[in-house]
Image (cartoon, rainbow, N blue to C red; front, side, top):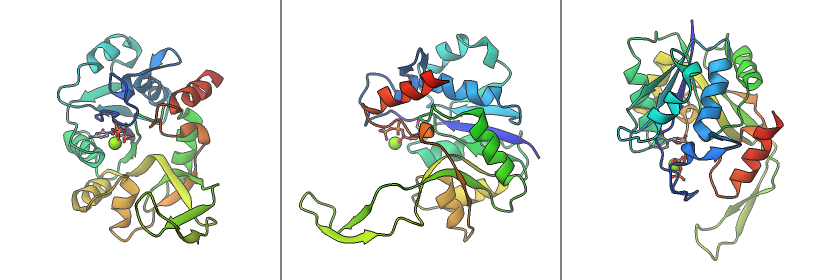
Amino acid sequence: SRYFALIPAAGVGARIGADIPKQYMQLAGEPMLMHVLDTFAEASAISHVYVVVSADDGYIADLMAAAPHLQGRVTVLFDGGPNRRDSVLNGLQAIREQAGDDDWVLVHDAARPGLTCALIERLIVALRDDAVGGLLALPVVDTLKRSDKNTQDARVAQTVARAELWAAQTPQMFRYGLLVRALTLAAAVTDEASAVEQLGLQPRLVEGSPRNFKVTLPHDVALAEMFLKEE
Ligand code: CTP
Ligand code: MG
C-alpha cells in the first residue's frame, strides 16, 4: 500500500488575526504552507501530496507558481468545507479514484510548519503494520485542572492526573477506507483520531515533537520562526 499526504489548508486563521489566512503568512522567509509542502515533497515514503484549499482561495496559485519543484508532487484540491473535518472528508472524496481502501493517508495541519521528514518517518515506521493507525502526540507537561464551570469565575473542580494524557498533533495516519468511513459517521470532531475512536478503535500514540506545535495565536509566530531557523 502507498502513503499519501492530505493537508487541510482551508481555514481563515481567525485567532491569529492576520490580514491573510495564516497558512499564507511568511515564516522564516516562506509562506507557512510552503514549509509543510516542502517537507512532504522531500519525504521519500510519500507517493503524492494533496492540499485542500477553499474554493475561492486567492493565494495558492501564486504559491504553486513560485514552487516549480512541487509540480507533479503536489495537487491542489479546491474542496475546503466549513470546518476542518469537512475539508478533510471533501479532500478524501476528491481523491477516491487515486487512493485504494488500504492505502495510508497522513492528514497534517497546514498550521504545523515545524514538521520534519524524521517525524514523518517515525510515524510511518511505527504504524505501517498496525491494524488501526495512529497519530503523533506529546505527553502533557502541565498540571491540569478541571473547572466547575466554563465562565470567568470558574473554580477548580478537580486536578486531572496527567500521567496518561497526551496532546494530539498531526500527521494522523489511517487507511483511506477506514478514514472515509470514520469521518462520514463522526459527530463533531477536531481530529481524525477522534472519528476513528467513535468506531470503537484505539489509535496508536507515537511521540511527536514540540517543534510540531500548531501555530494558532499571534505569539506563536516567533516560536515557529525560531524552530524553522534551527533546520
Ligand atoms: N482548516 C481547514 N478547513 C476549515 C478550517 C480549518 O482546512 N474549514 C485547516 C486549517 O487551514 C489548518 C487546520 O485545519 O491548517 C487546523 O485548523 P486551525 O488551526 O483551527 O486553523 P484555522 O481554522 O484557520 O484557525 P482559526 O480556528 O483560528 O480560525
Ligand atoms: Mg479553526
